[in-house]
Length: 78
Image (tube, rainbow, N blue to C red; front, side):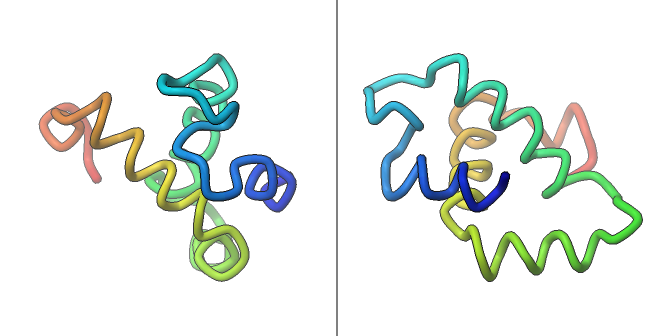
């Protein structure tokens, strides 16, 4: 699933290559942010896989977080 999403996103800012996020961007962020920011049983393996195999998804999550949740650190632990 992660590699399919990474392929769909490619080098675009958003999944449908438009100027604003779509429903898919919102749903993808909701799932991917959990992989990146919450403790998981196999956290190191998941994060390493994402860094190695789907770096554009890691960048996407960071970009969405910074663009739409600039107060993230004050409302949650990073």
